[in-house]
Structure formats: structure tokens, C-alpha cells
Image 1 (cartoon, helix red, strand yellow):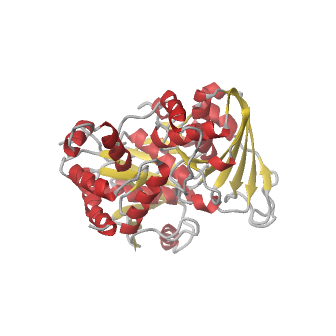
Image 2: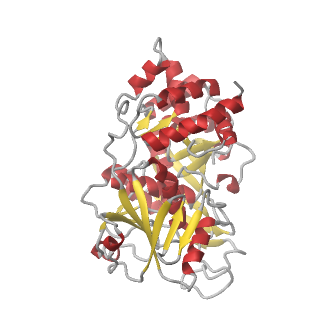
Image 3: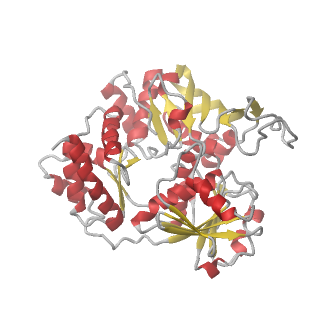
Length: 494
């Protein structure tokens, strides 16, 4: 059977695993859900650039078919890494015997998992709000987890609902919505791929009765940025039907700033209000943690080259902030950033060690963080690149850190990246204990993916991941000797 035919035959198997068993399949973190034949072929080709081993459809197709026969409970399964582990550790076991042993916790558990649905309300429907909606709708097919029930906005015009739906349907940066969208003007609802979303018009977060719409114990995600402290955000908790609140911006005061992959384990059931920090903090904190654990960070400076945002003026006009009144489309604008200091909320060991500044530039999305670090232990460019590549593939930070080593990539190549940050290996500069790293990040979509991960943590609906074994920092270090100093080139990982 040809490669195209094998990939085509995998599509219904991937769909059944997702819809019947709530199993999300991926290749090195790239989801296979609702993908075309060509996308599956490209994912297999991409895997060849991510590791030394060729990923053959002749191997992944029977692996998927076997998974479909195991009556699995909810899980996230990376078939590339699972196949690699079978070839290296399977020994004399058959494929089915290996999979039954590796996935023992979820084998035969279809329909018996403990995941429950959690109602989600998006308070605000701007850039982040609409991307969160896309991600939640994408995840709805599994039947368990986060259920997008409503969005709350202020009515902007008589045809407000149609305009909101149009903005969800079309996006100048991230492209068209994949699926169908219908509007019910009488009920004030938007139905996207079968997910019915109630549109609630309100100016006051404390007076909405969500229970009137059948919404209970909801997680409200405030993406307006209007309130950033406990006093302001607690207004949501006064509304009927609200259980918890998540802010998609850095919080003030004693609120926990969560970077998933770093300190999400500190979220307690008693935490009614949590913040997801900033896009820049999410991009740099995982890389900084990996580097600090391995080499030790004495001090450093973070310079972000950041795409312009809605709070800037398109043309010169009054703005209460310094410099932000000048045209965002025509200028590079020096501005402040609290990302470097905010890292310390997630990584206390870096308290007082980082400074930061930012330059807003005339691009609509994808930003770049430049980390200029002084290290306790010296390294070389090849060594640190190989270490970070291994962390992006096999560590507990693999959902946050990506790695690329290509001489042709530019910012638009990272639009739609689902990782928090992407290390650009060719740009790395290392002079023993002085290290300069360049980290790309989709400050909209990549950050939104991080927000959804925090939401899943708060709701307790995250799936167990397989294969479960991750390399530790020490194990990643040992790979350096095994692979030598040469570092392979990789293509964009969007």
C-alpha cells in the first residue's frame, strides 16, 4: 500500500480514537486530529527532521490500528515517540503486548475516565478571546473537558452578533476558521462546528446570572485586561454560576502568575483567581528554567522585539503611555516590559537576576525574545543547542520549548506555533559563560495554547500523556556525549 493510501486510511482511525475514546494523537506534539492526508504525510516527514529515526507510515499505521482495539480511556498519545520507544525498548514483545504494558493505566477504560465537563465563559472576545474560542471548539469533539458555553461582550452595534461571528470566521493573521459557523439572532447564539455559544451582553461582571443559561460552576476567562488585581477580578465571583476566574495577563498583588510547565502544580482547589502571566513570560520562563537547571544563571537581560498590539495607535494621536501614541504601523517603539521581573513569580530562583525592555515593531504577530545571560558554568553553541533540542523533544517542557535550526526562517514562519517559545539554534552565540539566545514566540496563538493548558489544570481535565517517560536534565546532558557536537537542521515547527 502506498504512503498516500496509508495516510488516508489513518484518518478515520484517528477520528474514532478521538471521538469515541477521547484520545488525542500527535507526532512530536503536532496534533493529528482533523488533519488531511497531506498534513499527515508532512507530519511524518517533519518527524525525520526532529530525530534521527525515520518515521514510517508502515509502522505508525499498525500502531494506530492496535491502539483503536484497546478500548482506551482519555489520553494524549505521541505516536512518533511511542513508536520510537517500541523499537528501542520493546524487545521480544509484540506491538500489542508493548502497547498494553505502556498504556496499562488507560487500556480498557473507555468511558470510565474521571474527566468531567467544565463550563467555560470567555469574558471579552478580542485577539486572545477568539483564539481561545477556536482552540476550545477544536477540542470539543472528544466529549470531555472544557466546554465553551458563553462569551460576554459589550454591545457595539445593532448587528453586533453578526460582526462577532465574522471576526471568529475570518482572521487576517491566523486565517479562516476551519468549519462552519451559524448565527441565531433571536437566541443571541453562535454555533461553531456544533458548539453552541451563548453571547451575553453586559457591562458589569458582577451582575450576570449564568445559571439562567444553564451554566454552572463555570471557569470565567477574563481576556479584557481591564482588571488585574484580586479586588477587580473577584467581581466575576459575585455572579451566579461562576466558580473560578483566570486572567490572560500578568496579575498584580499576591495573585499566582502561572506559566504552564513551570509552576502549574502550585494551583490549588482553593485558588479562585489565577493569572496566566504574559505571552513573553510564557515564552522565556521554560527556556530560562532549562538553562538555569543545567548551567546556572548569574544574571541576564531580556530584550523583546514585540509585534504591535491594540493598545497602540495606528497613526500619531494622544496616548497616556509614553511613546505609544506614535504610529504603530510606521515606527519601532521603545517601551517597558515587566516580563523579566514576572519570571521570578514562576521561577523564584531567578529573583533579582533579570532586567528587561521591549521594542514594539510594525508586524501584527510573532515576537522575538533575546536572552543575554551570564552563566555559572560555561558551554559552547553546539552543546547548549543540542541540550535545548533534547529538552524540546523528550523533557517535561516539550509542550513549551521548541527548537529550530534553519538558515531561512523569519517571523511569519512561526504563526500558529503551539509552543510557548522556539529556540533559534543558528542564532545562538556562546562565549564560555556568556550566552545569547534568540527565542521566537507567537504572542497570540502560542500564548493562547498555554492559557488552555492552565485552564485544563484548573478544571482537572488534562489527559495523561504517553509515552510517560521524560528525560531529566541529567539524561539530556548525557545525550550530548552520545550525539557529539553536530546539531542537525530542522524545518519550521508551526
